Amino acid sequence: MNAIGIMWIWSWIWIWSFVIRAEIRAEARAPNDLNSNAKAKKRPNIILFLTDDQDVTAGSIAPSIMPHLHEQFRNGGMEFHRYYVSTGLCCPSRATILRGQYCHNTQVYDNGDLNNETYQSGGWSKFLNLETETIATMLQSVGYETVLIGKYLNGYDLSEKSDAKVHKPLGWDHWMGLLTCFKFYGPIFTNGTDLIRTSNTVYQTDYMIDWVVDFLTQKRNTNNDKPFFLVVAPFAPHSPATPAKRHEHLFPNAAVPSNDNDAIDPPDNLQRGYPVWIKDMPKLTLSQIDHMNLFYKNRLRSLQAVDEGLDKLVQTLDDLGLTESTYFFYTSGE
Ligand SMILES: [Ca+2]
Image (cartoon, rainbow, N blue to C red; front, side, top):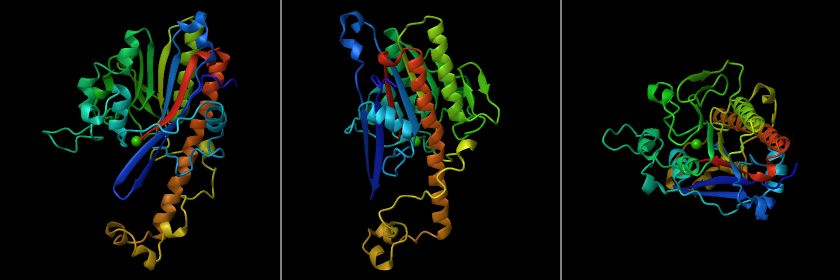
């Protein structure tokens, strides 16, 4: 794999005593042919691969968990160690990606409107009037072919909202908005006009990867050389983190990382030293710990289709001769 043009971004969140701090680190290497006069005018393709709720501190990007991410992006690309997320929450963060503004400017402060009829604090409905100018409309206006498949903004995916079923935001030439984020098997998408239903044997991440491979292949076969901006946004490893069946057996001994067992089950003398809001909490039960560990295993398992998908996309770029003209970012939504 020629790794030039591959980038890797990562994000992680530390939550400690009401303080939420978010960072993204990423790797980047510019395509080496952009310096030549002949190709300098050719604008690069851009892929933004966005998982949901993935973290660094729980070990999900370890080479043993995501080997393709490690080899092709982290080792083969460039890592941004000090990329900072301005708001460590899903919808405000995605609104910032789309608009390039802090949340006090987008005024998308939350994932939903918190049932407040007079003051909507966030969610897709709050973003609607901002869709007139986003990274998609801007790139489209300068000749990019713009594509999104996967999760959009919180609230867009609610299947009971009939307006989401037909709504295609401005600026996107190709739209495959995910309407059923929580359904890892049998996901439903919309292209802005029609619903695209899949059977219950179809795994969400696999479907997205195959769709992107088909899109890129078709674009190449029709000699469509417009530069593209492509967002791929699977829901993994977000709860419920349903793994693909072929990965259900993996990581049987994985457990929530901890510096020591005291973090999960602190002895009384240690717990007394914690802040009031922690030390007054009851200790976790064995059943709760088992539940956490099962969820943790499934998060890692659900990332396997992502890692396989990255390999498939990188291979597809290679096969189509697009590697050196494409920036490929990998990161996670908050
Ligand atoms: Ca999220």
